[in-house]
Image (cartoon, rainbow, N blue to C red; front, side, top):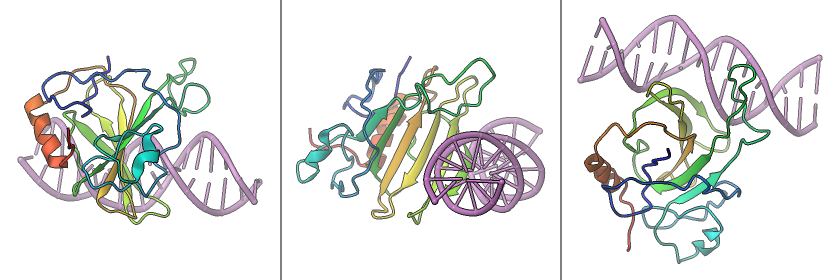
Length: 178
DNA sequence: CGAGTTTGACCGGCGC
DNA sequence: GCGCCGGTCAAACTCG
């Protein structure tokens, strides 16, 4: 199901299950002031309010079921409409935008974003039958902040080892302070 | 030579 | 209807 390689926990060797109903339709990372000084910028939920100094850990992650009904321009076949594609967005503070999460991604596009000096990159999971997408974007205000948005859920196991994943965490200089 | 990236073109949605 | 804009396609290209 949804074994998202998220870093909500500190244990890099178990499966990171994301509650599939982890939904909280809120606006997207609309708080540029959220510049925490940690690695992550906090789960996007309501918690944004605490962006002042509290901050702590966590990914600024936002999950919203965007497309259950009208969104979704998933041009699938006819009849088969847009399956609900949960989207999870989170910000991380990293110098590199390639956050290796254990899956293999193929880049299929890049676009300039308005009001942003940095382009947004579009990736798709290369696993057969898995059409999970993600897009990576950098904040223009803080070029160190990278916003990653996942769309869909992987239906297959991670292709890389979790050890490596641990590595990723370091790479992102994430977390914190637990 | 295969897998992944680059990059301009294309397309659909939306606001005017 | 038109133009803008975000997202995707696909051919050419690069790299291991």
